[in-house]
Image (cartoon, rainbow, N blue to C red; front, side, top):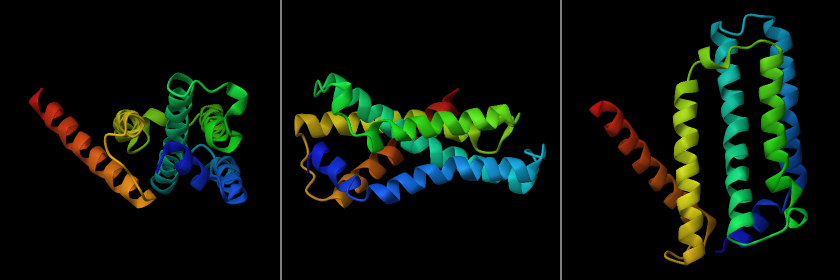
Length: 168
């Protein structure tokens, strides 16, 4: 399975992808309206954290794929599919902007330290997977094989990160 095959597999159902990404800012607006300044209280802080994870992970993946397409495949900006390369980043920026506008302290939300760590690990994992796939070091025939390998890489990097943090 090549990266193009994976992107084609993901973009087969554009309406579900579009609805997922449109639902996230709507949920952000609804939750900020309901919480009314109580963003650090228990149920709302966890909802905001889950929204941040749901927005940032596809956004980081999209940015990584965008960089890969620009530097490795030499594609022009107008050749990249909107639902994969641009919509996740736009929605990520929009949701973070809504949270900032409503004065939600993102740094004080639970799991945001882990979110930063997780995003760094995701960038490293996605970049290494893209390089492995481009150089054909390992052949992935099915999407589950790619997912399993990504999960193993992510777990290994997470353990190494924790080990390095404990050495300080």
